[in-house]
Image (cartoon, rainbow over all chains, first blue to last red):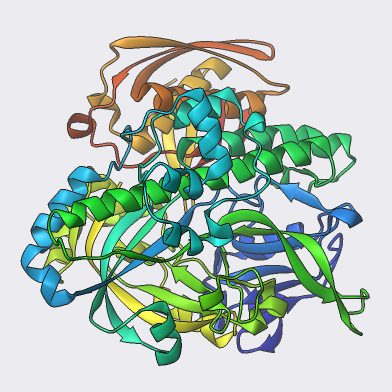
Length: 484
Length: 144
């Protein structure tokens, strides 16, 4: 991306003044190197989002932003329902509520090393992953509706976890306002046997070890210690979410036209929040959030059971579960005038985060009590060969980005390029030499997900930290990675 | 016309995070069939998928591009719910209606080694048009 189109506000904040149809400015949080590597399309896409009706304050791009569908991946935008604000299926994405959850343990690397191969093999066998995989549960129509209304709460009620788990999931494991009746039969049919499946692509299950602690105080509250083992799961709402997104992206093209909303790009198809299509989408999208939460909860149970057979003393505690493809109704303080002066007032906004993680800071009343002084855990997934990070939400992020931060490394190379460049077998062998065991049904899938095809996650996290979007707490390195 | 024949078929085009699929044909129907082959090739090698079972697919949309969007997403739906992969297609288009047959077989992980699930066909670079030589092109980026 060319720097000359941007106005530098600080080393980590770059502004695009409103021009043309933009209603608000656009802001990119990244350092100069990341900006230069960013696709020019990111600029175009955030400017387009900034032109949508009812957008509040600014449209934001996180440090890992790249070219997406209408919204960039790493895009954040909030809309006011009382100012004609819209909701956009593209602004949430095709994998609704895709997210990361991290479990902590008191195990150490020394506990894992002697059983690592066995652990990798057992996890690969017990965790349904990849194309065409099925879960163990087959849901009846009424169970499907219960799952879509209840989320992780539904899973816990059925024995897949504990009440303590629920306290450590956004919205306590259940998105309010889910309307299973607005989820099509086709979407439900796709999900009938997909609860408790990992999926494929960049989704994974990792056994990791903590190699660095950056903030002792917060690490202690989060239960993180150098040398300890964590387990992270990255996946979403599976076929149900893909189907809902596909259907509504079509419905919203017509809805936008009927409402006289001029779309700079068909992928920005949207509907006013206060409209029948907007309400139907929100009801279905929240059901998909619950589907993702239930999915990650059932997977957690599978992991706990798999580990119990190998390391019976292991106790897997849920640190947190974050979703990075969502639209959520949240209270935010916004300037009382368009001139951004004077005292702010609280407004109920619909915050789209497409490839961005909620990063609420200390003092946020919606957080679990133990995170009120530290801010929420922000879980950043890396690649199978590099690192993942745990960050903490900051008070500053509330005014900088509606309480949002980055979500991962972001690709820097296309799948075709990666496939040409690497052989899956070699990637697996090479990572094994570095102590990382990969299990995947497809070598081609591994090649396409090779660590070198991604941006430098360290640089992305550093930028998020320095921009005050979230604060570094711990670095995690994979030991075992199950890929779909 | 060797040049024209060479142009027919399918290909992938690059996209930073995902992948683009493109079908070329001497008719719109053929371009749609080739685009479907390109879609399957994102997931697995076509020559490993035997055309054993057939599935009928019907779509309707207000224009050619949305019809392609629907056709590809209908295929993804059939793949997901039937746990199948397809390698042969026959498409008929009558104005805004598409009727098709897809031949394939149940997904077998060790045989097909499927690399990745496709989440959806998207509006990005979605185009259905004829080039100067009359070849039909049907393409879009798919989200994986």
